[in-house]
Length: 166
Image 1: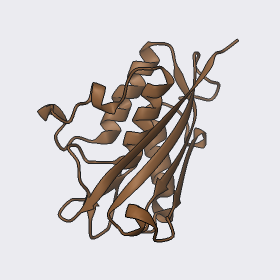
Image 2 (image 1 turned 90 degrees about the vertical axis):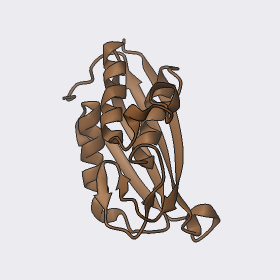
Image 3 (image 1 turned 180 degrees about the horizontal axis):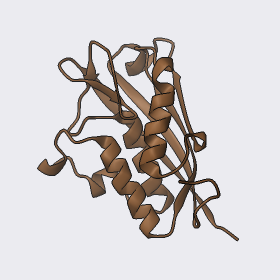
């Protein structure tokens, strides 16, 4: 019988001018981007934390510290590939992933499928196992005031490669 585990991730980054907005490995046209040491991809960071959480491996900062110049400006999708590889070497694989982006602007619907595909490819599963949803906060809180973007992720991992995985 396969064994399943679940991990939860959350991340938030401040919006700032002069940086690209990268979510799920997709560069989205917008007047502001996210502040951070890497590309500040808040969606992918939440996914990485969920993966590490599922196996009690710490968090993104434990494995990819923002004090390490090697990660300055790096692609978070590349970090996700590394994190997924760490799970695979331990015999675990992603069963499914569910995420929610909280952003007042821009509208993210046109970019959702590309985000799903990027996350799925980085984790070695088909896009049908990856859900990306987006919502506003009805102009409430820091997200509603256009100060930042937040993301939530829940992942189920399985101790053997699931059927239909890549």
